[in-house]
Length: 562
Image 1 (cartoon, rainbow, N blue to C red):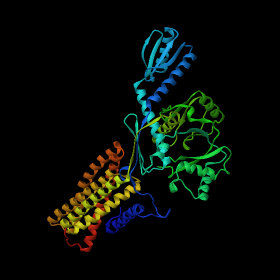
Image 2: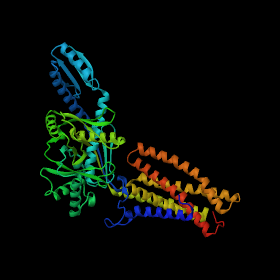
Image 3: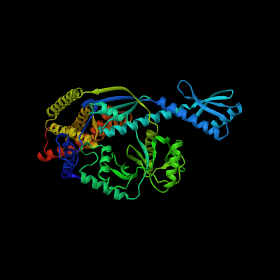
Image 4: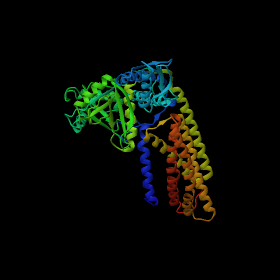
């Protein structure tokens, strides 16, 4: 650790450099590639306006489809086992499976089969004569409901990412609704068109005629020659893939295309992507998939299981049997989610082994299973609510919030200057740097500033001045005991540190809870609060100490007003 005034001066200069790098793009339009950081602070729906949409997910429709599919499967399985029984769907909601045997003996055989092979899926409601009735277990219905809503959210998120909205809010609302907020979008028509578009799932063989390095080199050359890049000038992923393939159409082998997978450690596709050369004639698509689910291997390692319908089973068996040892990419909307190696012929169902960090395996598996189901089981969405929030409301709120913050800042500065005199200047400069640091942190994180976030900034200002008050009062106590100015400052900062740390730590715990359990504006308030705590610890303690040491040098160790 660097000690002494000169060492702390270097750290302060680094701090100011950090603030400058991340704050400058918010105030000045910089040429492309000229500055280290080009992200601006994002503004939420309540500030810049946008579209507010609420969709209802047709969970009942998907459950009816599942129930009918299960009934058809049971009828086929009874036939294979020489059980003379048929399964049909009945009930007002089409959620009850009626099994009718040729005799009571066949009914009993069907019941025994359900108890042995379907005990974790179906429950028997009752039986009479040669018939019995069954339905899905309540736990399974709840699991499927969550899956369907998760599928819809995944599809919507893909659509919104294609639309290029910064920091959208996409979250479950209640049991079967999805809230979609698109800041900065004044025309919801185009957004709705993209959201309602069906997800396209495909299985494509990876073409091995070119190595991964050669494919990456081709993409880099196409970008350089065409002067484009993903995310540059608002270039969306779909448009980017189209540009890459058009630029390389004369260089790619016949019946192939290039698509990309997001690197495991990258936050966005722009930050890191891996190019794949894929065949376009594999002829196995997601509409032939029946189900996808998380499962576990012999040693508890997470895997993704999937199952095809009748036609898909035949095609998938042909493709996998003829290409053992090759990679088969799972592609959703031209995004490669995984590219596992085919180990054996897969007759209608199989597993995807997950590589990489074991801690991330389960999360990756859930993501892939959700993506597969999103293409296989598209739930219809019913628009329940639509609002276009005008920017005038947000501008008025921001103006009032800014005015409140400025007035509060001025009053606080006036108070500390009158009460603490020269030390009040230290507190005022520290307070200004605190706000600058907070905004720089939010810009660096790419966070979205909402009205609750502005409230978090105002709260940070109040907490920051509290830290300075504690320090200055502690210095006064040391001076009253007869300590020298230098000793009083050192003891004041050292003894006040524990109280400042404890108070900010408890506030950080509360903010972390808001971030974990909250959504939208509540989470934004929590993020702003934690960023404010970090900036307070830097400015109110470290930089204030540095400035007080500087005053000691100016006054040559003599006492000054505090």
